[in-house]
Figure (cartoon, rainbow, N blue to C red):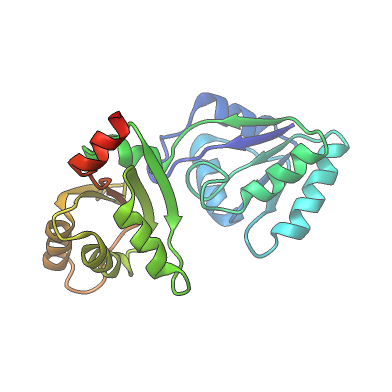
Length: 236
């Protein structure tokens, strides 16, 4: 059995009783950073039977090893440093391999920065698209242009070191008045939400952080409104 166990994205209390039980019972826990994981384990009295690292630099080799463990009957709990495995991390690779060999894959739901940011954004959540982290160079301009034309709400992860640049690029592509919300340090001590237009949010960040912004960021961008002509065409 392969368990995908969601872990806290900041506040260590954001973990379910079921997740704690599964982590205690699993034969193997695979995690991005064993040192980071031990902080969570110590907080909740979790005592791993066997702990291995699984991250973007060893994913192919480790996936093969873990699938072999699963084939021989071991239970594996897969966790990420923060949030739900498989969302903007390499966990999807082992999930795919496990499915191919007939291993049961069981999600243990919990914290997700995408959903947490959306729920508190004040922006339409009926339809949304998740972009994850945009490419740093190749393809970045095109992806930003796509976001500017997207009719659904868009969710983007961004580094605190690049968030102001991203906002500037979105203003250029989508206009300064596009509604947005920015969640920073979600569930942590200095959690804060900035809401307003792209330009207003950028101005707030510039005022508070003259240099680099501090804390992980999730940006929510309102979709573009259809013109009246487009609406009439659809209704017909």
